[in-house]
Amino acid sequence: MTRRYRFPQMAVRCPWCRAAVGELCTNPRGTQARRRDTHDARRLAWAMTTRCAECHADPGQACTTEIHGHTIPLPDVHPTRTPTTTP
Ligand SMILES: [Zn+2]
Ligand SMILES: [Zn+2]
Image (cartoon, rainbow, N blue to C red; front, side, top):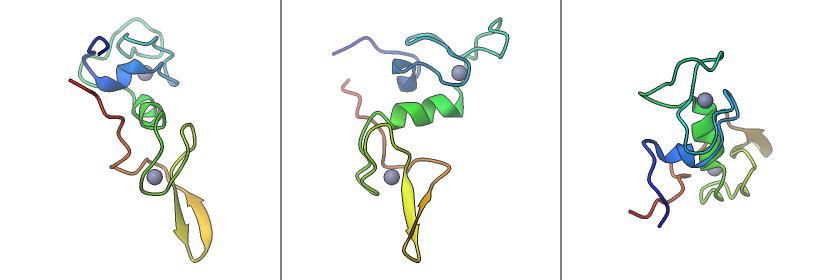
């Protein structure tokens, strides 16, 4: 369907280093591209473009878990919350 990126999470802008869609993450000064991975925040932002099937978090909302009746936000997303990329 759309063009493929080196990392699927490059389909969203990086909230951490502000790398644009389709561009590699860079160091804080924007002088060096990260070629091996992207920032974790970007992976989370990308995962959050979908709804979580596990905790039913809406797109844009962080994953949560329930402990003793309290809803606790998770520091990460559920592993199953991955936007499907059509090859
Ligand atoms: Zn980044
Ligand atoms: Zn979740």
